Length: 370
Figure 1 (tube, rainbow, N blue to C red):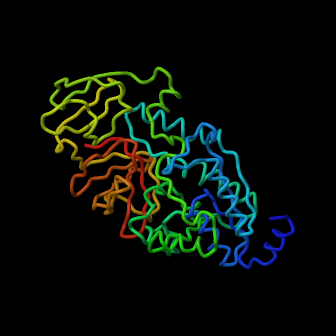
Figure 2: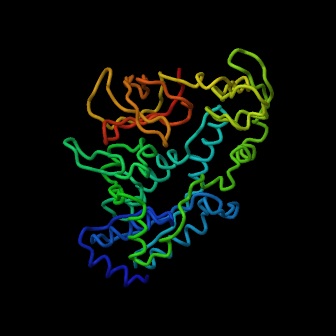
Figure 3: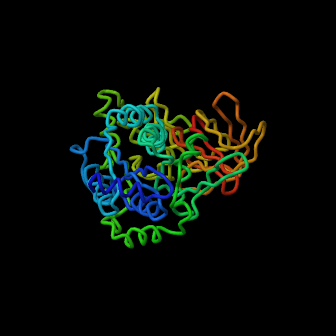
């Protein structure tokens, strides 16, 4: 698309300029198509986040170089401007390095949330403003609505594709600037139909499922490369104190894990705790996984001016439905959640997200659970 064509597109837009975060997938591509149809002057921006040359292209992963190529092809098909922003150093500092450190602490990190917090909903916001846009749109399956006190975030209309868990850290100011055109879609088929109707080259592209910067799924290998010598062997210990075996590093385990413990036969055992300081993997029967009280840090609150004991529903894993709980904010960025019924596999490093019905009230990072 030449400069003259972009100028004419701007002249014929009726709603102003909007930046679309284009990953090269079908969701963000359909988002751009929808907004153009609505009369926006759409500008696509693709973030170059990691070393594409070191990535291994596999069917279920993001492959950076191919994604950039796909995003550019979609922009050409739609006749919109498209820019690629090099964010590799920022992504390394704000997402990859903390990911490795979190694993070494015995946590189970979620880099997609960290990426939304930093590179996407911080740095991309500035890019959008620098480009003179009045809003930033993404292909996330969440909804944005106007409430009595400003915009609110709602769960996606399709429960199977709702991504609100990954956006709990979105601030009120960011929500003012954000748009989520796909949040009301009843299914992914609708999204693909939009892409097909516009003859977009990614209409049949598979969804990416693995972490983009670990395309081979070897998290331990990545941590070993980033922190040589930091992975220490230790004991696998039963909750009763009995040493059952040995391991080559706590980063090879997650809370709730049953398979791959290498402990032989007997009653099923699960990982119930990771003690990184003493290099111990603690295992026990399934009932030892049950947790009712969760402590959180870095809480983002999107609800009203509420105090004391707050009735909410919480989600402690992205794949689980919200469950009733009581929330107490400590006023210093932390919170305590008490579940009505115990949850299994509550892991430090994961997120605990708050809801009231369809509305997202925020969330925080899990520090510990009892």
